[in-house]
Length: 487
Image (cartoon, rainbow, N blue to C red; front, side, top):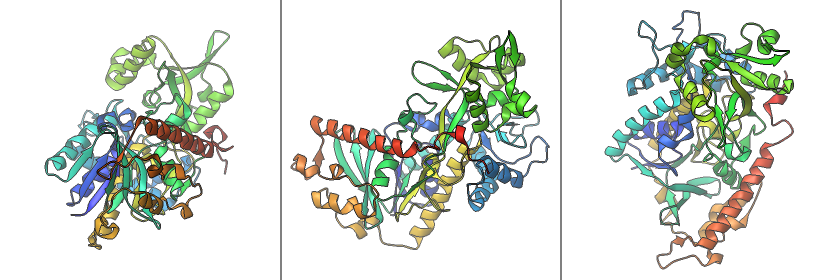
């Protein structure tokens, strides 16, 4: 049976696994935690599709143009067209899987306004859309787990790719349970590890998304692109642990941004951009707030407590729990925060990287968002990219009968293997520290690598240095979306 290895278990990883398993391909999913703790669960606002349930004349063509315009026309039109044309089908698929969407009075999926969009096209599940989609996908994945087509490796981390002569044959993994490095071969490897939130301190994202996987693969020859494009979400609240997202859904329901001057409120976005000023693209709102240099507040109290609890209950709970703010009575003090990464592993339309058999999906892949992502397009891109990669893998494997084990041979972890897989000739950065395990005298009687405390500390130190190098690469002069390209 053909084998696919998926690194990451969020929405893009789950989608890839489900689509491959549904075509009788065995999938091994690798992650340090269950899917319920993935970054995807934090996605609050919604998922875009031109369903036109509000009767505003929305269309797929309008969705395409809004996406291209929001990204400063840097994203490829063909890629964006595929994303937007497939959106209605993806919504139907999610409904079929049991995703609990908010509904209109006549039973249709409800849609709300989101920033940078010409129509109300963001479908949502209250303000916990990511959580609802993850729940539906987890239940579908469990069906295939029961059939033996999906296997999960929990408490397991990616260490490096098994790459030789520009071809990926699997991955080297660190098992947190037995503290061993283990090699897993596969006919295709799919990277679904999210962005690089942990590089920037307190952000809206999970600290598990640290950029290590993309950084290591870069050192092994994988190409990266668009690292300078980092999105700031304009409305977050600071807590002791992180920046908590105040979803764009609050402004989609009519929330207004303002600052105080002389005892009066100044609704600066409306003054500068008109009645839809609060729903300008995120980079525009964040940059405008930054230029003010003063405290900014978001007011939704005029909606009334009943409507707030019906439409954005999660935002009410977050503000009450972490800051003791009753948003039905008080305004929310908000500030921009690093939120999403448009850059990542460079992929083609099939989500293949420049390394054969290596794919990237979700936020870690750079393809659809150009210089700035529209709210509601991240969940769409996560699912679409997973389905696209799975289709490409299925089509390729159906034409190729040799398995990864046949091509690679009976693999055991030795120093010579480490040298063969390093592929340094294709890398822009080389570092032998990740390959010289035998110098540490860590080979046990079973010819496996056993992690000692000293080596674990050394590996952690090396990981920190690798992340720092990736961080420096990402923080180019044009890194912040406050310096958005003007065309």
